[in-house]
Image 1 (cartoon, rainbow, N blue to C red):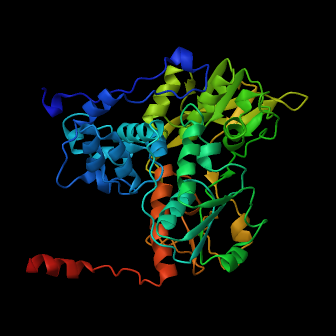
Image 2 (image 1 turned 60 degrees about the horizontal axis):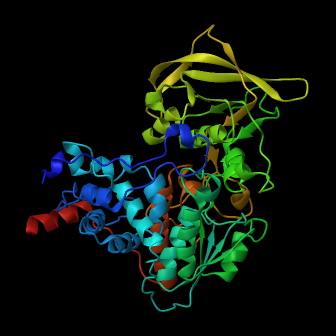
Image 3 (image 1 turned 90 degrees about the vertical axis):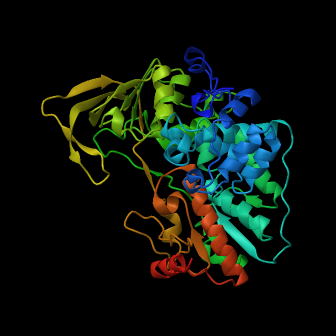
Length: 482
């Protein structure tokens, strides 16, 4: 048998670009058992695995990979679920290349182990073979928890606290669970059946979900605290930003939130089977360079657009989207107008967008983000013909909960202030985590925040003191004694 370092990283089979650009079926097919075991055999099973430290939810990565290598696929899935209630989702959408895989020791001499692909494989195998097992639960504590938002942070808190014996109720503003997993990420990247299955697992832990409950209108946080012993705020970052350039009020101009919500949550791509219409576009421009921009551009293509162009003011190197998502977009025929910035949207007499005035950019010195600042090139303006524009330049915090919750502290951007180590807010018993605290980020970071919050909420409700951290000098004394 070849040495471990000689085994190449196993690619996932996927749909042909010419086929998939016309459908909403998931792009990668996933590993076969044979491919999964070959990939798992690349792991060195380090004594001090750095990959665990790179995982925001601290999965025992070598342990679940060893189980795959040994052919115990169900055991691998159960090992994953000891720390992560949503492994099939994380295996698909989390940026493993920036977290667990970037510190993989195998990656020093060759490509890192495909941890995310193996996670997806194990979770899918468990679901497809009907081997989902509810873990042993702690006895009921008599304590009650209210969770605002059924996205990744809220679902994580719910699962963790339910296993500890608490009564948990999630209040969700929309008519379906999942938050950004349901409304934000397209079917071809994260099938909704996967989200529903993962949510069903959390519900089987005893979690109740109340839909169409807009907290701040349906109930206030103060009222929730009257019904529960502790409350978690996981409302995400759902307030879209716009560029504030002339013409953004023309018809045919969408925020990425609205565009993707219509397609993903409300199934507009299956109109008229689902009665949510969406504009029929021929020439679409998507403004932005993140994962959401890639999702919007690839969605527009599948909705029948003849030409889709991503307009981004920096170069490809600075694009925040995952390389895999950019690669898939390029394969599918998405155009990229890089080092380009829109300055005005143009429209016709009936108020519909018809074009976009742009200016070329060049990169100067790095700004506060660490990326080189884009600078307009004088006299380089030109016009792109469009009939739809999707603005995907980020999201902020919805102000509804802070506005209706006296004493809840926020920062200048409207994000809720919460302690990084305990997730507690300025109101005792009220905790917060995920995008509503740190701004729009990743699914796995929201889940990591959820685990921190769940542990702190459990201690709070059960009267357990917060752990005292050793001071650095005390740690050094212990080392010297050893």
